[in-house]
Every structure is written in C-alpha cells, then in structure tokens.
Image 1 (spheres, rainbow over the protein chains, first blue to last red):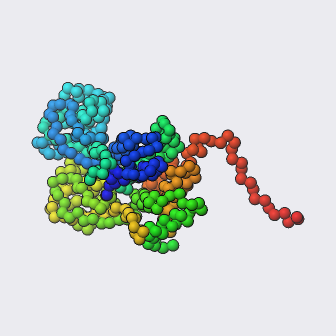
Image 2 (cartoon, rainbow over the protein chains, first blue to last red; image 1 turned 180 degrees about the vertical axis):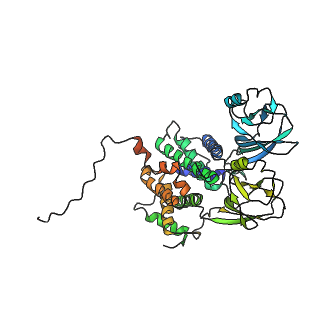
Image 3 (cartoon, one colour; image 1 turned 30 degrees about the vertical axis):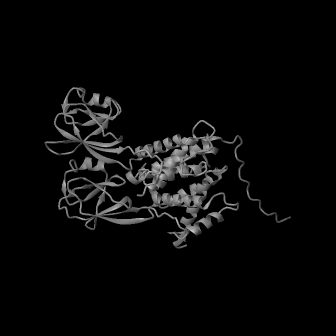
Length: 216
Length: 231
C-alpha cells in the first residue's frame, strides 16, 4: 500500500486547476494560496479516514476505577468500538454506543453508581473524553478500536512526508480537496465542478465502505 | 477479444485516437490519468490479486496486522483450509469473550484494511495464515510498462483517462458519460457496488441538467416514416 507524497498531491492539484505544476510551490493565479490548499488536502484526508474507517487501529488504555469520564487516545478521530477488560478476569466486555437519554432511561443512577460498564457516550462532554455508563467498579483496561488522526502533510519534500491513505484512495482525497477549493466563494468559484468533485469523493467513501463492511 | 498486454505507449496512443481534436494534454498528464484509472479499477474489481503468507500467528492478540503488498484481504486460509468470514459485531453477539478464546481458528473478521481478527486465536502458535487478497495496483511509468486487460476494460480505462484529462477544461461535462461508462463496466464485476445507492446516483446523468431543467419538455421522438409505395 504505497502512499503518495504531499508534493505529488499538490502537483496533481495544480494540473487539475490549471496552475503551472511545480510540486505545489507557487499558485500564481492568486485564486488559492499554498496554505489553504494544504489545509484543504489535510482536512479531506482526515475526513476520509473518519468517514471510511479504512485505517482503524486499536489501543489499550488504563481505566480509572469509579470515574464516569474516561480519556480517549490523544490522536482519536472517531470510535469504532470500545471494550472493557477487567484486570481480575481478563474477559472482554464490549460496550454499546448510547447517548445520555438512553443512559438515563436504562440506568437512572448511572452518574453516581459504579458497576460493569455497559455503554459509552461520546460528544456529550469534553473533547478526547467519553463517559462510561456506569463507571467501572473494578480495575481494568479499555480496548479502543478507533480511527486515528493522520499527521499533516507539509509538501516540502521532507522524506516521509506522505499521505496516510493508500495510493488507491488518494484520487478521492484529491477530489474532495478540489470540491473544497472550487466551492470557495471567490474568483475560483466553480459550483458545478465542486459538486461533481464532491460526488467523486462520495464514490471513494462508498467503495471503501463496501470493501470493509460489504455495504454502504 | 482476449486479454492482451498493452503498453503505456499504446494506451496513450489510444487516448489520442478517441478525440479528433489536437490533444489538450501532455504525456505526463495522460500517464497520470491512466494510472488513476488503473487504481480505481483495482479498487472496484480487485483485478490484481496476490496470496501473502503471514507465517506463524501470535496467540496473545486477537488482532493481526496484514503485511504489504496486500491492499485488502478477500479470503483467509489457516494451514491451507479456508476460514469463514464474519464481522466483529457478529462475533460479539454469538461468541462473547471471543477475544481471549484459543484453539484452531475458524472465523475471521476485517477490522480495517490492514487489520483482521481471528476467532479462536491460534493455540498452537505454529500455524500458517495465508491471506489471498487484492495487491497494490501496477503503476505505469516507462513507455514499455504494460497491463494485462481485455478490450472492454481497455475501452473503459481510456474513457476514464479522457474524462480525467477533460476535467480541467470548459465543456468538461460532455465527458461525464465516459466516467459513467467506467463505473458501469466496473459494476459488471462488482455486484455490491452495482447495488449501492451511490451507483444509482452516479447513473442518473448530468447533475447540471437536473439542477436547471429546461422549460420546454423534450419533443416526443418522431415515428419512422413508412415508405410511400405509390410515390
């Protein structure tokens, strides 16, 4: 799975946008700056990883006994699954993704009691934290299956400055980038091409999810 | 027409043959377009496959990272026998505690493109896991580099290349049917993709026409005129 370099990606974008290709160094039309092109490319890569989960990994983190709020991995983008592993038994207990209402209806005393965690709540607290419902009453470990953030591409020729997505999916990240650049309100605004590029990005998300899950 | 080895030089010539105008692209751009078409073709159809032997499997971890050059696994074999493909949620539902169960592997589940789960874990530690899956797409660089594709596939590939090259120019929407033809040809080898909602959306036609419908409906097609024998 050979990835593509940042410079190669910017060069490709220059060709598609009728800018003189020079590995992304200059954008003489003035419609876009190098900084915003880089931002759009990195943003779309993160979005593609999150939308598809094609490079999900796993990490083990210690569980804080008796505490509802627990930490997520520092490079967390999205959760695929969480399991609790009590130290005493070593058996995995998968948690269900729920929200606050489900937790309140299912176990009204969950904020104040401890037990074997049954579910987890995302996005209802601080960033990079989740809530265990209920809090673990024993020492243990969290197994996180999650989508991690990709390091930002700098496109400065540094060795190892690569996109994280496999090269087969790079075209779709580039189409997503084109959708952002051409959708910008300005002299480079091209809503028709932007809409089509967004459709191409969705094509990549569809095929990635078909490969992983067998359905969209 | 049977599969044939077609070089990059021939593919670029076939691109030029598909337009009457002076080519509006450079050889470098044409090569990029063709390589992009090959990548997407491999994604949709799994054209290029390879078996990869992972060797002995660690018994302490339910997850196994797959090595390159595998893009994604289609089939896994344990000591030569096929494993049944399932999903992680199905394992959670049907086999609680599957992560720590040890024995002879019977099931496998994809976790991500390069990560799989085995159930049960290998208890012996001396088994051989073989992954049969899609390999990296060949990249055409030199004029003599070639791919082994049928005529229909070459037609779809050069059509996609032309769509890629036309993206940057005015009137690019006239080349959208070439992209649709590429998807249609790939869909013939991928029933899952053909059944997807995206496929139906992509085949609907030019979105610009849908966004700005004409005020007058298209006239009905005229009926063929019968020859007048008395004339």
